[in-house]
Amino acid sequence: MIVTLTKIKIMSGLTAVVLGATGMIGEALVKQLITDPNYSTIRLLVRRSVNYTEPKVEVFVVDFSDLTDLEQKLGSGDHIFSCLGTTLSKVKGDQSEYRKIDLEIPVNTAKLGLKNGFKKFLIITAVGSNARSGNSYIRLKGEIEEALKQLNYPILHIFQPSLLMGDRKEFRLMEKIIQAVMPVFAILMVGGLKKFKPIRGVEVAEAMIAAAKMKETGIFVHGYESIKELKR
Image 1: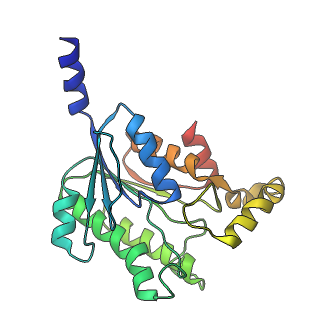
Image 2: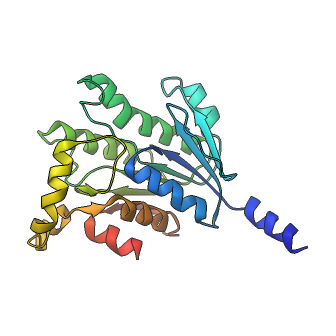
C-alpha cells in the first residue's frame, strides 16, 4: 500500500519544461529538478540529443523553426524554464541565427505554452536589459522581455543576472579572465552597483525553482538581490 501511494504522489507531481538544458544554468536546473519531489516530469526540448537515464526526464529533439513540431513536443504542463543563450562567436557572427536562438525560440515556446495550458514562464535575460539600448546584446534581452510581457502570462518571472560564475562546457577565455578578477571588485559593488555583482549559475537555478513555487500572480523581475533572497 505504501508503494502504491508513493507512485500516485509522484505521478501527480508538476511537469516542468526546460529550454537550454545543456548550458551552465540549464544543466544545474535539471539536476535540481530531478531531486525535487514536487516535480514528476522534466521535459527537455533540445536541438541536439542529450542522454539522461533518470525516469523523470523526457528528452525531445525539436525543430524549433517548425511550430507544429514545437507545440507537439512541448505538450502540456505547469512550468516552462528558459535558460537559452548563445554568443555571436558560437553562431559564427550570424545575427539572424543569434536572434532566432535568443529571442524567437523562447518567445514562440511561451506563446505555445500559454495555448497548451502552462501558467508559469521563467526566463533568464541579463542585467540592464533594455529594448532601446544602443548595445545589441542588452537591446535583444530587452526585446525578449517586452515580447513576453505582452503575452499576459498569469505568472512571468524574469531573471537578470550579471556575470555568471561557474563552469561551462565550452571554453570562453575572456569570461574566465573576468571570473578570476571580478570577485575582488565585487566587494566594492554597493548601492546601485550591487546589481552588477557576479553570481553562481547554480544559485540562479535555485532561485528559478523557488520562484516557480510562488503562488503570487503577475510579472516579477529578479536582479542580484532578489535572486539571492529567493535561493534562501
